[in-house]
Image (tube, rainbow, N blue to C red; front, top):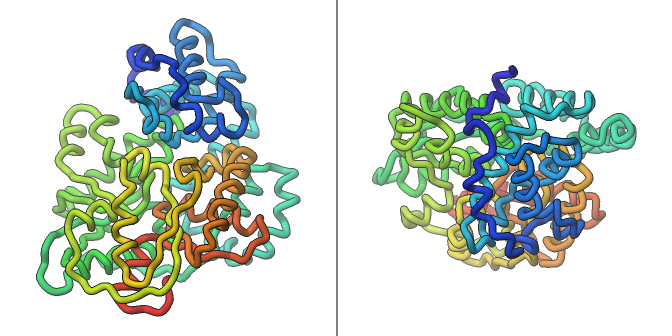
Length: 424
């Protein structure tokens, strides 16, 4: 058996978690796929019904797997559920079962192997910089041909951001002024290789707020993409390596600037066992916005005269419950007007690898999100997750609208603290 899909998250689907669902329907309007298609089996309670069928002895069929694959894992239903159903646990367990028991078509298997042999490995992602230098125009001109070969490969070409100059971060960034705290910084895979400017801005902001920032080299992947895609063996392996890296660095607090990574790392103690669970529990994981609000500001904010729309990343708002903190940080920037996006709780369609593995549904959701973002009339979109940034940028481009720049919360704060005229 492939060790990457070895079911470490229990032997199967937990019947007790299934029994918590009372099928009330409160989850329906929060579920992106139900909103799109209105199909009961593509809603959380419908998928839980299918999980129950499998627990009762029904094999995983192709149709059943399709309904599970169509789930974004956005956790909006967890927020909406009045009964406290742990759908997040259920879908992780279910996906591990699907990967173990269901035989996918060869083309699907090939795409999944490509994704999971590439994205969790920063060095391999780094090798993608050369084809990215072909430029967005050329990549998009060949997209129709790619679409005929594989919609997933076409989605990859469409989503890939423009390459930026990669600057290696130092292992330690000293606090500006009096040191108030010492924290570790997760650099991430996609964030570190495609958006290194976000990590640089994060380190500067933390330092200007009095934090000494420790950045362990060769951190590797945190395991988020693997965990959310039914590969618990791979996820656990990455989790153990991440814990060990920050233990060696001598920090007990890790600040994360990517929503999906933070959500998974906060759950390490639940996905590992034995001593590793104890070691995970000894390290505090905090999202950047969450940590800065708790710490409190000391650095002077300079004016940024612009309007900004804030996008709620699902694994920040739903999985971590962090909604007010980013808005509080942005609202404190002089001159910045914050605008809300309609249907902010509905996923943009990125969802880790979803926009590659389920490109048609992802495109529908991305176009829907782009329409809501453009309706705000904002000068800038603020996003706290690299996948969301790529997804919404691509959708706005497809809309043929004037491009709206997308920045991370850290970049906005960095520009304000350093009195910059541009965010970047």
